[in-house]
Length: 305
Ligand SMILES: NC(=O)c1ccc[n+]([C@@H]2O[C@H](COP(=O)([O-])OP(=O)(O)OC[C@H]3O[C@@H](n4cnc5c(N)ncnc54)[C@H](OP(=O)(O)O)[C@@H]3O)[C@@H](O)[C@H]2O)c1
Image (cartoon, rainbow, N blue to C red; front, side, top):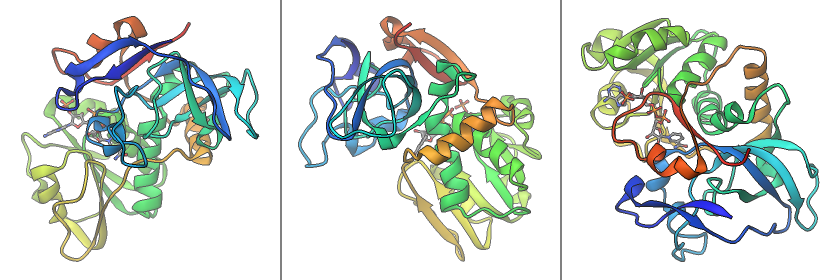
């Protein structure tokens, strides 16, 4: 089968190639899915799981991409809950070969049914950003209605989901990003917007929850405006700046079918939308995933027709 593999850790996107690989066989409780569309999260380069397996052994030329939508083509020994021909979407195990390939093996418990009303392109754009926002806000951030959320990168893939879900939940959302993203962030539902290249985070006052997708100096300045008892949640690696009197944590998203169902329900009825920027076929995935200029919105690769 055709697959996109990473050849060189230091080269990141410059080191990916279209390659020919054997199709996967399903392990116990797995399904094999014919991948229709796949997303990709740049954090994969930095996560150890891309380069070593769960035993700590090097992974040679891993297949990248772990969020996807597709159709179940075979079942592993003992697999229950899904059937051949079923439309599914979700995130595959970060330590295993991924979904920028014609077929992927994945544990059935990582997948949720994809309703017929949601196409594969949209389905593939949802799992990572949708689940990251959901888990950061509700599981790790313990958001309550009426609280204030500082949603960094509010026009980006994760930040736009954070903004929409937090607003629906009854929070007051201050979106941030570049000045050019103001209108997009407001359209996603931010109550107000701060351009990080123009404004000063200290002018916002205190917030209950910071959702950090940027890190570095932005994280440091954000930590200082967390209200006593508030939380800073980061998805860009171990937290370097902590609130004086609050919680700080980082996490890597997990595939939770009940949360995928919550997210896709909202897409189906129009409460939630994704920002898809570039769509390309698997044969053109290498340049699409390593663009020469910065592109807005999520890149989704169509794998099989
Ligand atoms: N831990 C996890 O489970 C997890 C899950 C998903 C994503 N992530 C990570 O989270 C980060 C965000 O992912 P994403 O998919 O949402 O990326 P994205 O779509 O590129 O969104 C990031 C947004 O933040 C903006 N931004 C970045 N740096 C900025 C700065 N210094 N000033 C103002 N705006 C800035 C970007 O603007 P520009 O486009 O103009 O730069 C963009 O709008 C990535 O590092 C990703 O790897 C982690």
